[in-house]
Length: 175
Image (cartoon, rainbow, N blue to C red; front, side, top):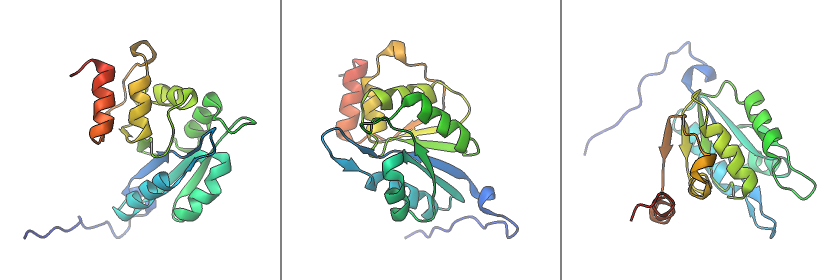
């Protein structure tokens, strides 16, 4: 059995030295289902793996609960309308303002695949400024985007399981 050890950390380092990530996810669907465990788990996993700073970007009504599940993360409230749907332009502005220092974005855990999520995803993928990890509903939203809606410029890592891969393959005409 091979042993693994993490690289030695600079003793003069601080949270900003060891990387930063913003996890964008969570939702309350119109049928009342609430999904906030997956983004909290992703935020906790990033911190446990050595990331110095983790931000959790979730719809405003869910953020406090998400942060209680990922207490080492800081939060970004994504604005919602009167029925709880994300407001894409305001959500993108919040991400741009508060996650500007994050070196990587994770998009999708528990995020949902409706039109607002698709618009947020398409906008963030059209930028070259930082890598994006697409997971879960990020992949499902990606599969639903029309090719004309998408300008993929961000360095992107996709993490599909078999079902998500099937949706992506079908969307791109791969058998």
